[in-house]
Length: 166
Image (cartoon, rainbow, N blue to C red; front, top):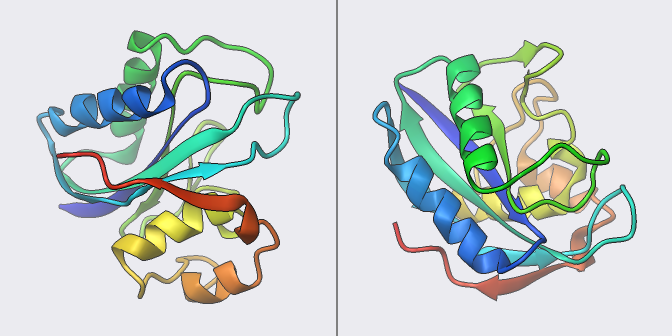
């Protein structure tokens, strides 16, 4: 079993309901056991066209499946929830990303583990550290705490709601 972390974000419609709906769908995947969730945070969008603020959280899970298969299932959940292809970094009903997966390092066109922008994004680092303050980036070999200290977007991340019920 691999310990993994999934980032969840939404900035279209009822953002909190979208996150809760995604958590529920992820929690019933047969090969995955959700262990915990971070609180939900409100953040400014990063990149893309002008758009509304995001809600973000992170799930910790144990999985028996390969990351590529999990990515396909997460993309299926996004589609089921109404996500459509649009402008890069544009608004979205739901965004699901594999952030970390044990010590696995992948650098493929469709899947990068650790997530390529993880170390630069406070909206991911803060919820990850809420779950486990001792996480270390598997390729940079730096504690996520240090990466967060170096991150310039930290002030834009505000607590919004407690963790979604699992």
